[in-house]
Image (cartoon, rainbow, N blue to C red):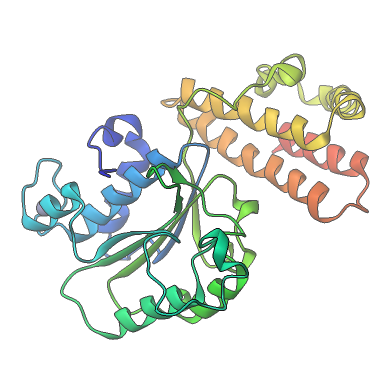
Length: 301
Ligand SMILES: [Zn+2]
């Protein structure tokens, strides 16, 4: 199924431009392990393929370049650019990596990890790009999570992620960074990719709380915190925080050219993500403390 789509450049001009200048930068500011996150996995895959094209193009990554590498990547026949899912690999034996082989392959297995390591041991003329994600039988792309990319697979590849051979890039596609094994997240450069899809992106519960919050006066922080705590006493905290993120994401889409606001919202998305993680991973942590920290960060930074 073809996933490369030129329109990704119009859809995400800032992100594509960021990678273009990073790839052409002599200091190599783009790392070899990247994590794209957000609600739209297909768009993330398009961005990943565009990154692969810029890394492999022989003519500086020009948009309309027709060199063999660019052509192969557009047709998705490039020998060294791979969309890697649990389904795109035949196990040599019925492997013990899969707990229940009868219900189909559940994850990118250790055997698959070893195949990548073996492949990388042979030198290549191309820049190798591995795009890790999941897909269903129909070919719809799905995000990486802790089930389809488990700790055992991650451990088998850890050294490779840290010190890959030259001209190798790994790209993970996921919905939320907290869905990915932390050893991968800590080794990757993360990039938020806003979703333009309709669906699970409502923010009706939090509209009154959060609308245009960046225009609020700093001394309103305490009343903001109080309202936030009220909302959380009536709703699940994770739903409230996710809706706040949805609102921020929506606002980013509408204000893509406002650099100051864009940067603030990108930073604030991370603060809300931290709050979510604290609620998830440290249940002992007082909800009030999490809300207080978050309110102050949103208002005072
Ligand atoms: Zn080219």
